[in-house]
Every structure is written in C-alpha cells, then in structure tokens.
Image 1 (cartoon, rainbow, N blue to C red):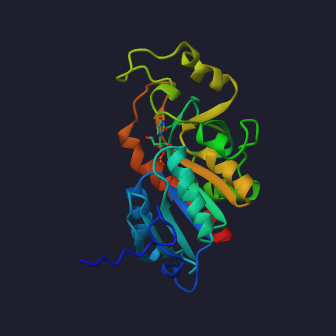
Image 2 (cartoon, helix red, strand yellow; image 1 turned 60 degrees about the vertical axis):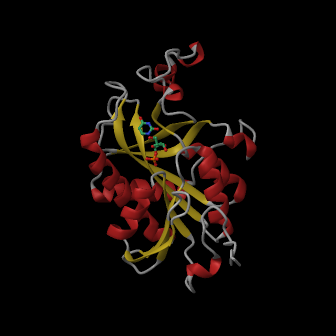
Image 3 (cartoon, rainbow, N blue to C red; image 1 turned 30 degrees about the vertical axis):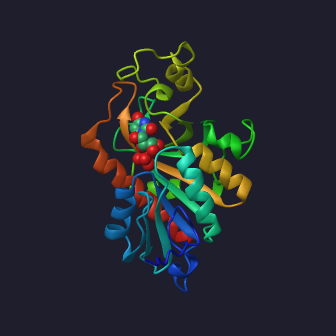
Length: 261
Ligand SMILES: O=P(O)(O)O[C@H]1O[C@H](CO)[C@@H](O)[C@H]1O
Ligand SMILES: O=c1cc[nH]c(=O)[nH]1
C-alpha cells in the first residue's frame, strides 16, 4: 500500500510554515506542560486553533485581545527538549519567547501563588553547553523582563524579580531528599542554602538554556513562573496554590505580550 508521508517543515513541532496562515505570529508563550499550552489557547486567546499535538509538544495559534496573533507552544520538561522546540520556533519566525512555568521558591518572602520573574539564570544545564560555553551569560531580555514586571504591578500580582536557578533535575538537582534516590551526592548537599545566600530566588528547569539561546540566536527571551513550592518549608509542591500561581503567571505573560507581538 502506498503511503503519503509528508514531512512537516518543523519535524518535532509537527507543523509547517503554511499552517501559520498569512499573519504569522512572531511571539510565543512557551509552557513546559502541554495542558498549560492548551489552557492558554482555549481560555485566554481569541479564535484558538490547534496547530499540532506531536510528542506532547502541543502548539496552538490564537489572538491576543488586541487581535495580534501569537503561538502557545510546549517546551516539554528540561533543557534538551526545550532546545529542540526553541530552535524550531525560531526557524518558524518566532522572535520573542516568554516562558510561563511553575517553580519552587527558595526565599521565604516569595510565596506559593506569587510569580517569579527571572532577570537572569544560574544555568546548571548540560544542554546549554552545546549552545555556548558555561560562562556565557544566561541573561533575560531586559525590555521584555521590564514588561513582565510592569504587567505584574498593573495586575496586582505578587512577584519577585531576581536570579533563577535552572537545573537539569527536579529531585537531585533541587536537593530533594524525599525521593527514590537514597544518596544525594555531597556536591549537592547544602546547595539550596548556598543559592539562597547568593540571592537566587527560585528553582526551575528551562529558563537558563532559553536565555542563552536568546542571546546566541538573537531573539528576546524572558520567563515568569508561578510559585507552587516553598522550599524554605517543604520539598513537596503545594497543590492548592497551583491554579492561582499558573493563572497569575499566564496573565502577566499575556499582558506583557501585547507590547511585543
Ligand atoms: O511547569 P513547567 O513549565 O514544566 O516548569 C517546571 O515544572 C517541571 C517540573 O515539575 C519543569 O519543567 C520545571 O521547570
Ligand atoms: O519545586 C519546583 C516546582 C516546580 N518546578 C520545579 O522545577 N521545581
């Protein structure tokens, strides 16, 4: 039997340039979780349209309240997956990426339900070393980051602006001891306190590599995360805070997106 397998322009994203229509978006909101990407498109954007749901890297098109088109896309968890998605998004014409994530706070005053806006990242991520050397700055786009801060202030969303620790693992790399691994390496014991003293505000798993890619490729990158764990109190996510935290992060990101789409 003959099959007509046509390769999409963007192999992992699973869509092609022509799928983007005549008014191609230049801004993407990038979530780790495909359900968040879908939620944003279906509930926060006008005229949502599914572009692809390939490997869980779901992508949707939609319009901001101003009528400007944007993409709601999915990075997957961790920097290797994000690096593939971001590379293909840039090939698709995306020039501004706002990551909307979830995160664990390591400072007492940054509480579940609030958002962390990253001005840069302490990037402890293997994939980033394929993009640029370790000492290359993982700095967010300053203009986009200011827009996120202004959006949080205007919306009355509690936020902290600071340095984010972007690491490759949720358990070991974020110094969780209550996991299947009985042995946390000595090099990681005490690392959260060390970062707290260095005024790092939160842990997550993608922003640092995104920022390095933004600087190397020449696109604007920023990150806002809803705080769902308070690591000064407990390792576990505070599930009751998740919906509010994510809603806050999404609202902040979309308000900032209006200026850049
Ligand atoms: O909620 P997302 O965007 O996936 O972000 C955070 O959640 C995942 C870990 O639970 C990691 O991807 C981390 O960065
Ligand atoms: O503690 C947390 C919560 C969400 N995502 C992370 O990477 N860490």
